[in-house]
Image (tube, rainbow, N blue to C red; front, side, top):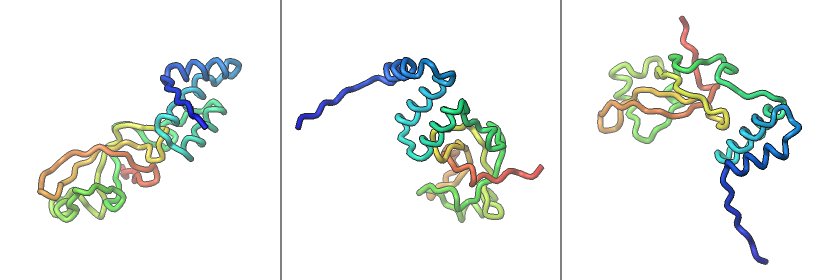
Length: 145
């Protein structure tokens, strides 16, 4: 059996989807959702986002009661990086009560770990760095004001 490979630019696929969905009032949202999830290969999250898109709903960071540039806390054990020296971070006060302060810098609705954060860490060589990563909404601890 022979197989064919077709390379299709996402802009072309978007136009095709919009033509198929021409009657839907949510066609732009549905097309964006399908393309984002194809590009990110997000499985279960993709199905959830597609369900919302079909209803005309686009998930936003405010749906999690969070804001961009909001200062939050994350349990130290919920952040993984091969080069983190957690003991050094405890000594200098970056880790307090087993939590690390972070700042929300973005939101990626097509990912399960959709909250993009930035935080300070110390690597195994003792160098202080700023790292940007994604985390799960359920790992976010709101700061008490």
